[in-house]
Amino acid sequence: MKFVSSLCVIGPSVIVRLAGFQVEVSPPLSLNPDVPTHVIAVANQKGGVGKTTTAVNLAACLAAAGRRVLLFDLDPQANATSGLGLEKIEGASCYRALLDDSPLLEKIQPTAFENLQIIPSEVDLCGADIDLARAEDHLLRVQRALKPVIESGRFDVILMDCAPSLGVLTLNSFAAAHSLLVPLQCEYYALEGISMITRLLNQLRDGGINPGLKLIGVVMTMYDARTKLSQQVVSEVRQHFGELVFETTIPRTTRLAEAPSFGKPIIHYDKYSAGAAAYEVLAQELARRLDQ
Ligand code: ATP
Ligand code: MG
Image (tube, rainbow, N blue to C red; front, top):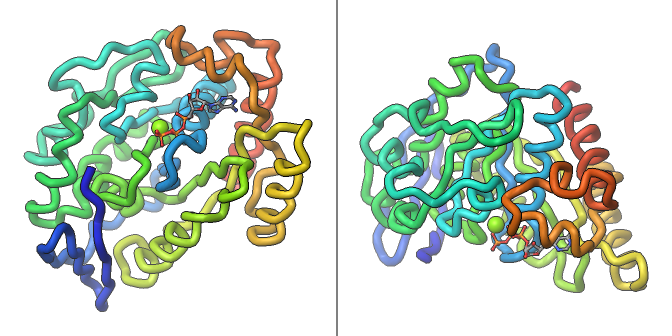
């Protein structure tokens, strides 16, 4: 997968250098602040930290609590898609809508779960980073495609599951989001990588690409109460991010790891498990932050 090798914000435009070539991006379309749909990018460029598990389970818990939720799978690995029990179908992803402005609304599919819909991913998204990098306004394609979805008023929350990179698709999701939610794994190198995300967040905000973008919270994942390391990492991250860290930590449990292979979020796979309880409480915390 290609990575953006540098991103430089100059006044209202952004210059992105990607694999040796440079593209200038003009000012953004603004999101309509009157429409109460919260768009959240679940992101961390580190792999395997619990982004997809968090996006899928938060989406399911918010939907079960009566919010109308759209899970937008922006990762070519399509783990959120299969985690909700959907097949990877050629042509089903947002790829064409991002490239040729065909309606993203038509890509929305129902899931087996009430109030929860999805824009699935599939492998064609692998090419999107490269194809989008060549297109005009290429950092604003997701923002532009999402505008009618937001304006349709069909969703209270849109959760975007990002790939483990800061490539063009992920930057698109940052440009389209109201806020970022960052899962951090309870491990020694947890904080590594988040500095890049906070720097990018500031660049997108200060450069006028997405002036309202904020960090809605950091969630600690795969917490193992038996180890001192987990406790130390959580306390270090809390020192760094203070109240931005959600009070709820997600435990490391086998049930959470198993659920995707049954195509179910944890609350539908094992409703009374520790993982289900944790994501339900996290969803309540998130909902309170969104309502503030
Ligand atoms: P990628 O960067 O590849 O997209 P990711 O950040 O989305 O990965 P996940 O796919 O959510 O991470 O999780 C990585 C692996 O860890 C998966 O096998 C998942 O089932 C497992 N996992 C995630 N959270 C937990 C947890 N709390 N307890 C046990 N296993 C977990
Ligand atoms: Mg993932």
